[in-house]
Length: 410
Image 1 (cartoon, one colour):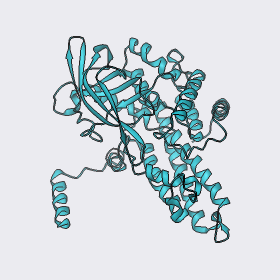
Image 2 (cartoon, rainbow, N blue to C red):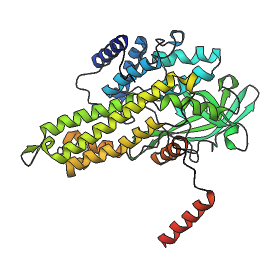
Image 3 (cartoon, rainbow, N blue to C red):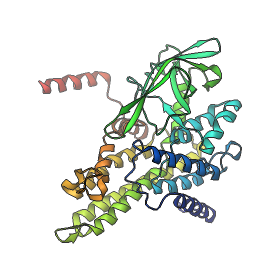
Image 4 (cartoon, rainbow, N blue to C red):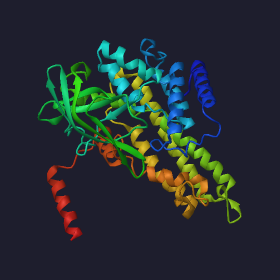
């Protein structure tokens, strides 16, 4: 099996790398900024740079030229995303690029494609994925936001929560219940909702790890039926199909690698008991294990990209091992780094005593909130069932286990 790239693909890698590095300030510290805790100036910078990348076609390199992309293969798109991931930068329109945009490509009408895709490809529009609700997270089918057709408009009412965003969105890619059915999955539809539609309210929601997210409230929000994406009552299935584009990116292992490389340089320069940290055998062993983790994640991500390039022959992958490893590394690596730093690892950015600019503590905090795209536990269940073919525990055993745990508490 050949794990290499062609000469043409390596030229693309260099071109993308040069563009990204030349556009980002030299003093940019990828570990100091966090996705949802940016200042106004930082957010404005990333919006401007997003537009520049859109002009080059680097936001959507795998899209057709007709829809604003470069018409490249999934492998070549993976190369561009890997180079972007290594910079540690962030696109304000992540949801549009990786979730809403692909869904419109697959399920949208020609009119919807012409209306919505150019803004995503050019980097001028920002989308939010508005799926999670107080009672619908990992159980995505338990949607309570209701959409009722009245004339030419659907009227939406209800609440979305834990919505990740950098700035007020131009559009919301949202699920809503359009029929009461059993099973619940069959009564949900997808809508493309303008973010400034009357009746939509945004409320800041602080979190422990991911900074500020938002609650979104729909109160008699009128959405034209032309903004229904795909088939009525098939939104759950459309959404699940589009997730394949979000969760198998090559950028995640590249981002982890960049952070580890920077931390290794820190360990080479920082001394403890008169010796550089890197000279400690246990430190070296830990760093080596982390490097192996990231290389495994990278190979898994590239296998997913290759599999995606063969979708017509092989079909969609029924589970997301790449996303699982991303959550695993996001959770375990900050703890390992904190153990290397000792008590200094608990100090936050801004403290004069903080080591490595307090970035380890920040990473550890983020690891408390790895709920986007499902928790680590939910990912394990999916991989166990769909990947390994393991049976689910019968409901009666779940009841016995729950009763046993209650007895222990007493």
